[in-house]
Image (cartoon, rainbow, N blue to C red; front, side, top):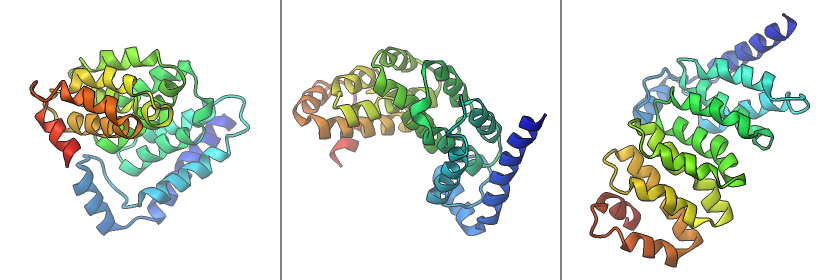
Length: 228
């Protein structure tokens, strides 16, 4: 019971502090820019991340991530955009402690995604850290490229971003992105373009060779995005 009260207190604290930083005009602008159906406090991302890291630091010495995840789960179910963002950044602050068993947790979170920033936060900051450590997760991401869900497909691409950026594994990017080069959803095409831009920074020659194979195969939207 004491633990439950403690978790509830942290959730309440996050909500109280976000509300204290709220800005109505910023909330309107953020809602319009992100196209999210959720409510907004109007708190800028650096402030959200700072709050999330502060809460996460309290759990650094916990034996497991259970307590942190319990708070994050409650916030992720919120109707407020910044509370959901806080959930992602809280876990990201202790991302080195994630293991394979946490993958399904975040796959479940993807079902609740309604905006690109939350999709990318989960796919890059959380799942991407696992992909970076273990390349075999790319096979799972490859399977996601067949999903009917737009955010699943975008997450498939964004999931290899860290591995591409930090390890120079452009082949992982090509392996996942090749199934999305003709995707009709602009959200997915944007994600693919972001990842291939990172691949180009790591290995320009290999990336150009990959792109050249698509110049006559109906991937014009992505190719144009990469050339702009």
